[in-house]
Length: 258
Ligand code: ADP
Ligand code: MG
Image 1: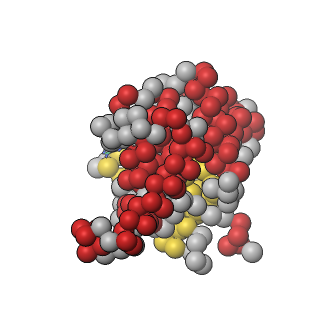
Image 2: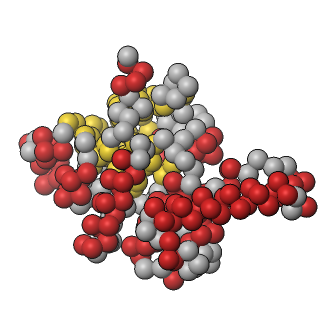
Image 3: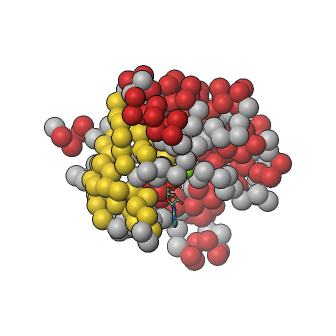
């Protein structure tokens, strides 16, 4: 049925800043279990789309629907409501708690799993201590998944840049998302770090998490994405398989004209 065919459906998303249409009525459909690329020249509206999807920006018009529990409208909800609906993200610039360890950064992402009352937290009841033990074990499992196990006790600011980017993704995974949004995760990484990142993104998809990937490195897009949408000046100008899109004259022109 149509419900199973798409995890996310964006219908005519319009995001206006004064006279500028950062998104000029964009449709986007993402199938479950896929890595969906979102590409386009600088300023084409990619990060704006992420911000609309995660509630940081409220779209001027249009709708965003997540196909959980029969279809849940995300537009108009707060970022934390959207996160709890199963949509996690990383930012274009690394946003970690720099003075906290890698483990503590992931534990922050697990905060929502604490069900106890304020009373439990203040008094350190057995329930609270059990929840903390469970959260720690889960955080270590996530660090393990990300290949960061040995760096659990290292402060985020002392991690090499490539590891910081992986830790951010790990913290997003702590939300147990159905959909993970990555905004230029390979930016500024060395070639070996990019290879690690690509392997991990593939592992995340294989674990059943749908991914939307904004990326400038075309080899990363070509290697990972099941489907690609191309934005230019707030309009979707092409969509299809990675190879098909890369050969599209409209896409080549958009990049050359930038
Ligand atoms: P991309 O991520 O594709 O490089 P953005 O989505 O960041 O592009 O930006 C798209 C356009 O929207 C740009 O012209 C940018 O300056 C503008 N824009 C984004 N956010 C804001 C904002 N909060 N206020 C005003 N203009 C914005
Ligand atoms: Mg951007």
